[in-house]
Amino acid sequence: MTRHRAGVLLVLASTLPFALAGIFTRAITTDIWTILAWRGLIGGGLVLVYALWREGARPMRARGWLLACVSGAASVAFLSAFRLTSVANVSLIYATAPFAAAALDWVTSREPIRARVMRAALMSCLGVALVVTGGLGQGRVAGDLLALVMTALMAATTILIRRSGDVPVLRAMAAAAIPLTLAGVAFGNPLAVSLPDVALLAGFGASFALATILLTEGARRIPPAEAAFLGGAEVPVAIALAALLLAEWPPLLTWGGGAIVLAAVLMHSHAGMVEERAARTLSSSGR
Image (cartoon, rainbow, N blue to C red; front, side):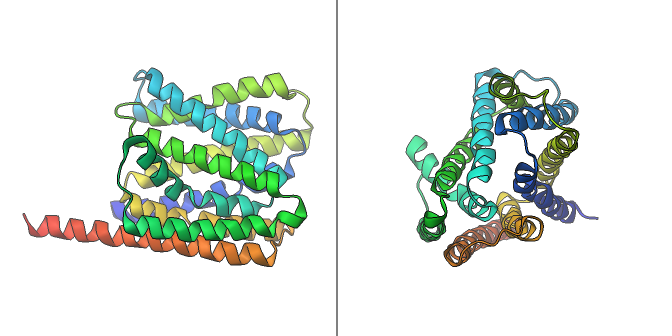
């Protein structure tokens, strides 16, 4: 198997455990802080073991701890949103994270936003507006707003990773478990969980670690735009799983807004793939 094909398969494989986040959050009956504590402890612990093997024991430095804290805050907003709105809404709003990252990059470094990115971002904003409007009469606005906060925090995480230099990124992501576990102990009750919840919490932590490792290994082998394009498969998988396992069928406006968001993300990612291939071809012909 070629390196590129392995990367494609690994990224695609990561979309299933990532898409299970909403299912686990809904299925587990304990409070959200307890979920965060156990997911952080189990998932973060497994990622840490892998990270130490992959990255060694380089110092985290302040930038690494900042990345850990921002990633941890994103997890709080992410899982809390699943309790307050539909899996479809969270997944579709999160799909706009690449555009939020581009906007944040412009704000913090004045990195120019390309015209095609701007067009796709405006298109996705229209889609998100329809998704949020679809939940207005169903008491889901708070969850949608939390999903928007999570998307902004994930965009910040992306920017920090991009500017991480020699920071051990995987160890920083694993370290995000520390504030989550401490918050879970402070605000939740991690020791008072039922046996069914123990099994689900263990599965949630393991699936989070598996998704992180698969995505990391896949992204090492293929261009960034292609990884983003393939990772977009998480959205329809999450919505399909919510429909099958939770009988959760979004309203018509969500379907319409979701179609617009996915179209914007796919067109943007595909354009990036075409540009990367053209650049590689040009580079090869110039040798």
